[in-house]
Length: 176
Ligand code: IMP
Ligand code: MG
Image 1 (cartoon, helix red, strand yellow):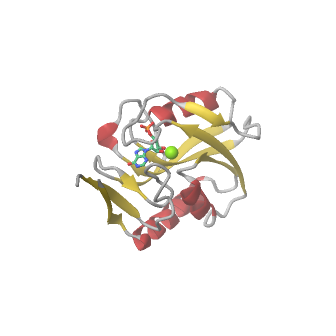
Image 2 (cartoon, helix red, strand yellow):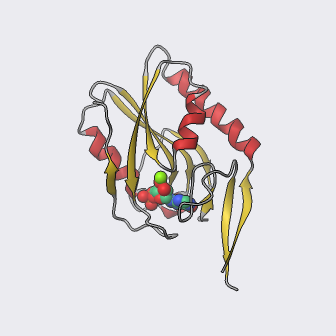
């Protein structure tokens, strides 16, 4: 089996879009503070890049969840590997995700976090595959809508590899 990565969204386009999202967020949160929640590991690149352009005060926390295992399809079973370290009660929470696929992960997380009484809870995702949706997710900020492809790079992995690519690429697996 051979793996190949074909560029889908190049580095420049990703960078430009991240800045646009930050500008939108800056407008919406003017006069407020943002408590960013980064969902490890996939959204770490996106969260950090986005945070660099946010002008209102930012605090950050991290949560590690798994939903995929090492394969290409969602298991539908969400495990919290590491919970938040800070209380979110009364905070303006921005949940930052790499990609919404079936929506199961974010739907589960959003419900779980809502019970902790944040002042507000919004979702920001770099990528969205709307065709694959099974569970409802309301994303306030979306970088790019993409087709039903398996993508890697800018934090997204396949079996823990390719996260470090500076662009978003389609993973193509060829039988020998
Ligand atoms: P969902 O619960 O099906 O929406 O899955 C969301 C999670 O699955 C994301 O946070 C990613 O970690 C992973 N995922 C979904 N699609 C892809 C993909 O195309 N490439 C890499 N990871 C993906
Ligand atoms: Mg993820």
